[in-house]
Amino acid sequence: MKLDAAALRERMRRRFPPAFSVYGDEREEGAEAEAKPAAVLVPIVDDAQELTVLFTQRTTQLKAHAGQVSFPGGRAEPGDASPEFTALREAQEEIGLDPARVEVLGRLPDYHTRTGYVVAPVVALLSPPLALVPDPAEVAEIFYVPLAFLLDPANHRRASRSWQGRTVSFYEMRYQNGRTIWGATAGMIVNLYRHLIPELPR
Image (cartoon, rainbow, N blue to C red; front, side, top):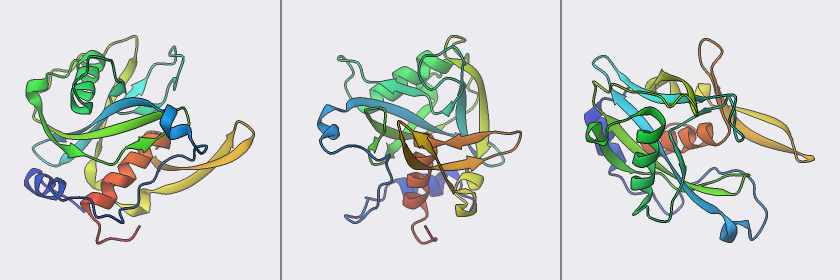
């Protein structure tokens, strides 16, 4: 399903119903109290032809999540006023995103990761031109995927792998040129789909 900027704004104004199903990684009981706060920006670009979502390919030199596809974002710092502040600060540091080009539309439910973070996904609309400058220490590449592709449930695949002696499952989305969006990033996209298009199958 294709949405334009006006429809995206309208749908993001909806409140999450009490029974909204949040997909998150499995975690041990009690781990939530020890989770470290973080935030990511879910950056939807208002291109002339269609809405696209910006992703970063992390560098292979990073200690954590090296080479993975992700949203701009990171751990909250003590002076951060809100998850929105954290997401915008991290996006400016990682890809040189000017906050003046960003319209924050709302937040998705927090996403808990197996690595001990509780992540606030901040959905935003970006207005070109963006003039992005990736930090070479963190970001190997920036690329874009049509929002319509990400909102198509046929592209929401389930996969599994061995992690710390057990089998864990997760979502993945395979885009062209060998791009695979998986794990927490893909899980947040599924939550975005569930919020924007609740009338379609899950």
